[in-house]
Image (cartoon, rainbow, N blue to C red):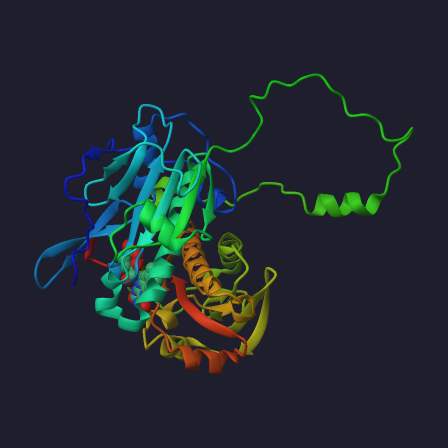
Amino acid sequence: MPNPWRRYEGAPRIDLPAGPPPPEASALSVLLGERGPLTPLRGADLLSQLLFYSASISATKLVPSTGYRYALRVNPSSGNLHPVEFHCTARGLAGWEDGLYHYQPSCHMLERRAGGVFTAAGTESLVFVLTAIAWREAWKYQDRAYRYCLHDAGHAWQSLALAARACGMDTTARTDFDDAALAAALRLAGDEWPLLVVGVHAPCQGGEADWSAGEPNALSESVVDYPWPATMHAATTRRPSYPPSRPFGETVRGRRSALDFRGGAETMPLAALRTILACAAIGGRITLYLYVHRVDGLAPGIYLLRCADLELVKMGDQRLIAAGLSLGQDLAGNACVAFSMIANTEKIVADRDYRDALIEAGAIGQRLYIAAEALGLRATGIGAFFDDEVHRYLDIRDGQVVYHFAIGHPVHDPRVEA
Ligand SMILES: Cc1cc2nc3c(=O)[nH]c(=O)nc-3n(C[C@H](O)[C@H](O)[C@H](O)COP(=O)(O)O)c2cc1C
């Protein structure tokens, strides 16, 4: 097992302020697109808050046989191996030196690798570059490792994007960079590859604008009323209304993967499942199949999520098959609902689309984790499954299964300490 921490030996370390205030916006409202209040912060406080609620250590886990405790983070990772590193370029942040930084989660510090203005990754005042060190996964997961790196990058992306949103900011993610040029500009080690660029910016609201006079002119003497476009427009207008949930800060720092689920007769409400599915929606490269085991008001079976509707594909108890397809992991059968995420292969036309599809699956996974947690349930990402058997069982002809997931009522894990 390689060293789990990348360090830039000799780089000055800047301690980020401890105990940044928790974003109080409700976790579900953030997932459904609402921004928390934007508070102007000094650079150190802003970076501390963003990273504390997206990438820092949030708990430890005990290995009972040795008494050794290892760290768990806000963002999940296959086998807790964390191949993803967070780098950022900062420019013009209040009280903060411009430059290129690398996050050190073990001590919540930033290593300043270089000073000056970096625009190689983007022109926003704060740009994160998420990289992966694949062999940190490969020593354990071999050929499966690259997939997991992409999923982990998707999880890290949404972890960061949601934290930014909860703190009143927007993000823009990009994967269309020149890999070699970006790696060279950031002087990354040869074993570290850039996977995702996430620019962070304050929202465009126009609230402080200096309005010059100017009234819209009348386009005709009288307004002709065409009711149908107005009805269509009203039907597609956003009217924010969010189900109550735990606050964002508490939810993301309390997020954990369930070791297993309780199984038995305990169910989850259909409304909760619908909310979770609404929160998960992102991208368009992934189709979700659901193995419904224990959802009130929904008969057990396989369902396909199509345009927010659940379409029954197969009736009947899926508990054994869901666990079997997930490499015999009981949690996929003991959950209330398990998932197969299928990449739509007709959308994979260039090599890069493969990466994007797997990153998107990870991003959906992160949103499922936070939505489940916000509603008092728990989730687990499942990277281990039998691809061909899943394709056969679900009759997938032009898709590729890329990720499994499970949500339900967790069993207590006595090894975890917050
Ligand atoms: C891409 C990915 C694949 C995973 N695959 C599995 C899996 O097959 N089985 C499992 O029990 N947990 C799986 N997990 C959960 C991880 O083991 C878990 O995230 C890690 O131990 C860290 O714990 P935490 O999520 O509580 O922080 C996976 C997580 C991710 C992100």
